[in-house]
Image (cartoon, rainbow, N blue to C red; front, side, top):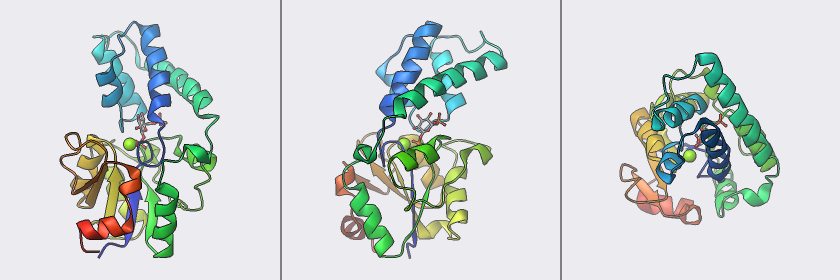
Length: 219
Ligand code: B16
Ligand code: MG
């Protein structure tokens, strides 16, 4: 039986990717790395330092900087990002998500957040969603980022549930891979081709309702 839902943040609850993109784009320009849509898409779900490595690699610059310089670049990106997300409000929650969370809580499902973002507590506060997410996986305590299953394994542990009792919700291929690897049921939100590995897929957040999930699987 399904007893818990483990949520990704960016692309599922809100669209922070545009702000991540803007902040990384600015840094890429400063480093002389050509910014492309493929690069922006590839960064979804990937940790901050892994994102920086990807950008440097795209510009053949992965060996050009010391670890110290890389940490400085990532900190600079994050400063820009924090400025960009500073104006977020509950209007930035994706459509259908507040109703879905309310429905889950009304049915006593356990809920937690499994975002790679170290900024997710700030974002949950800005979106006024802390009441639904008293439990948040701390990504700084994990050894590996998505697509490694660790973050979803940890999410189930924090909910005191077995993986098979959990549904994970993701918008990125790396995230679906992490959920599947953890032995949980995966819901993908978005493009069918990108999310072909998802157990259940919805084109948009408004389609993700308990009724539709029940129709896709018996819970
Ligand atoms: P931060 P998610 C991820 O969030 C983003 O998709 C990814 O682009 C970002 O680099 C990562 O969080 C780390 O974020 O720099 O704020 O710690 O999709 O796992 O909710
Ligand atoms: Mg995501």
